[in-house]
Image (cartoon, rainbow, N blue to C red; front, side, top):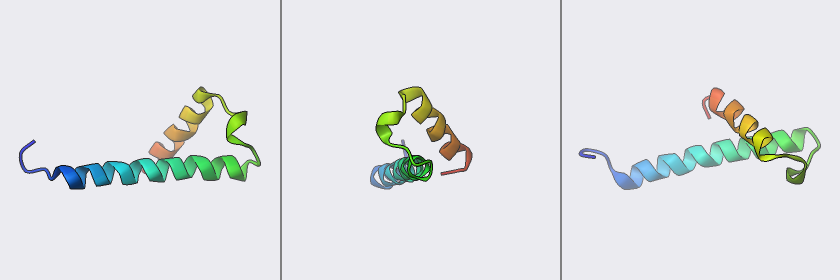
Length: 55
């Protein structure tokens, strides 16, 4: 797309992914749980929480 720096766009996407992933990690840790305790649907719900918070 004209006028968009692909490297900068990729970096922003990676940063967003890491913020959301870190949110999931912290949420699981704060609940005293482990990754293995969660089904994909539950992890998706936490991911959506992160998105809802603008992460």
